[in-house]
Amino acid sequence: MELFIDRGWIKTPADIFTIIARHGDAIKNLDGFGDKSVLNLNAAIEGARKIDLHRFLYAIGIPDVGEVTAKLLAKTFGNMDRVRHATYGELLVVDGIGDTMANEIVSFFADEHNNRVIDELLNQITVIDAKTNTNTDGPLMGKKIVLTGTLANYTRDEMRELLESMGARVQSSVSPKTDIVLAGADAGSKLQRATELNIPIWSESDIEKLKK
Image: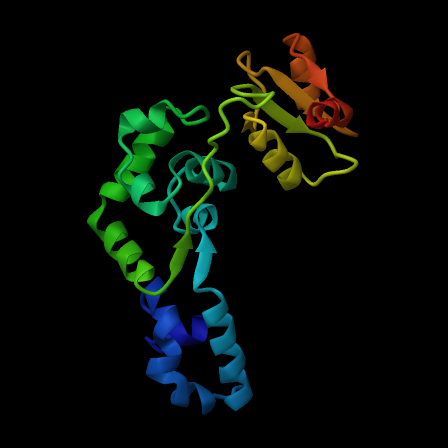
């Protein structure tokens, strides 16, 4: 990347996806490159043309939006167009997004340069829409749950998807508004905080019972 940027071949993120068409022959002649290197590079670029919405939102660098918030935005709005045009009020009602973050998101998508870069990228890639949480009668509908510790039978992502399929909202930190803390092995400060606030502590077996 540094080599191509230094040569002026990549100036914007979208340029990555056209570099083979524009400079493929020149790349073959660079030290350390050749026909096979260009084929491998092209395969990697083509393999990156489809990306999940939450990964795209995280990758474009919205201030204060990390992986957790990117997933929250994707789950709430479902597609890139809805995220880009979400109002301050629509963002603020999303559990887990506060005043500062809502302002940062709105400001980011109001910026002309950011929109130009995004539009150029969208001409080269496909952003895969997210499945929004449409479960209105799950056993955990509306419950705010925090995961902590190491789970025995699930990865964090697997458990998050399971909880969300049951209607829960998975949060990153414990607060007085948290309904349940799901604790695995070696749970630390989040478990302690939940105990101080008298929040119910669940284990994996409690979730398994709801599946039956």
